[in-house]
Image 1 (cartoon, helix red, strand yellow):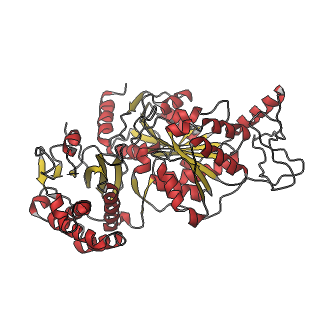
Image 2: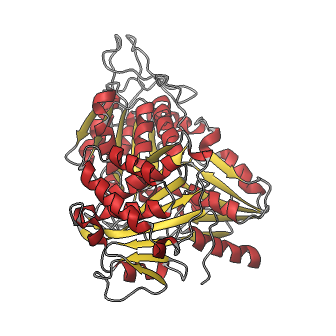
Image 3: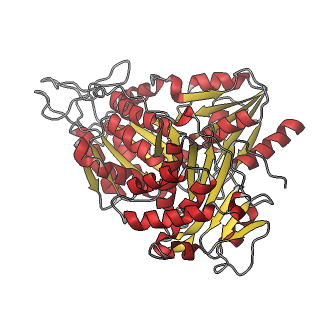
Length: 570
């Protein structure tokens, strides 16, 4: 199959085992590439083991920002035996391969260049520094000046063997300047102004920062990949932001702690993944009937069961949508970039507080563990608005009104009793089995769903709204849709991305009704968001679905769309 060209870009794929420092290599390379003035997008592929296996990190280095996964790299660096065989299907005849001949039984097909990686790092201290020596090779190939590179190495590793790392990097840089490498990969990327002032951060960091900006001051969670990054990030910020962090004994305890925190006036969040959230469902129902705000970060991974615990999928939309017994309103956000992750997580706290409902931030492994170069996040620094009242003597926690939003007080805020109950209750919060009261309370709670406000950033339209073909993406496929709409260069093709997937924004539905052909792109088997659109009256003519645990490769979807557009969507 002929590879698709990516002008003004080089994709570097680094393969190694857990324990070889791929995370450190990725962080350093992203740092130095950004400082050099180039855009970079980094994504990981991780096997579910502590040491060993074969992991990869993909760096898309370009003049213009990108945020989608590429299947075919321009350069592969294989740091472990077996890497070439496993990645063979992702390579093309133009891929340059750097490999250690002592670790491979046979030379790779195509443009293979043997490098004794341990020998390069020997003088610096041995195999521990192989990774940073490879970083030196890559910096030389990218044309990053050596003096500037050395300065960045000293700054980056100032607290961790700076001299050894500098020696290894310098040896690698010298190897990268040799003719066999310089002539094999033609990298002609010139740094530009697009990078100045831009931030480099992961999806986990963006969700954590959004929570802090939303006023989060309590998090209770049980670690579970790929949500753990948010918990650890917030734990690192606890002292600076007055945040209470509790690693609970299990997910049931975590969500109940969160509800207790909201009840007493805190702004709390839980962060979890599929199997962990399954244990939280009763707590979601408790939030529904007690009308206690709740923010739940649900980081998706392939199921059912343990599934593929370190891979990605968008298979939990229905889980979030239908979790909990009985009828009660909720909101589900699904950000697609670090900027969206920051904004919707911050907004989740405001909406939960205002409407007294569970609000989900639905992410996945691809978003959580990828790193973007993004514009500075917009934050006005204002203290988040609180939707609390003081309880009067005759305070009615569940007062029936037209909006369905009863006045919420916390214990000790006034003269009245603050009663909440998981049984059906009257306006004062006292248990009742009166059928008429039951109907009044259910109707009151559900009226909140009718008044949920929409925001302009709940959807993003890429291209015109009057095109014949509308691609639909949600969550982490935002970068994919953005690149596809640009790459297809067809005025009849646009992309509509949803960062709020429930309730489906009316503005988005109005745009989709104008399109002749709607194509939903999702990382799941059943087309869960497409089904939501169909339930809202949208005719989804076609779907592009993937559920192998990997993110969509932009080349694959591009070819599929070309076939559909040229041959007509089914």
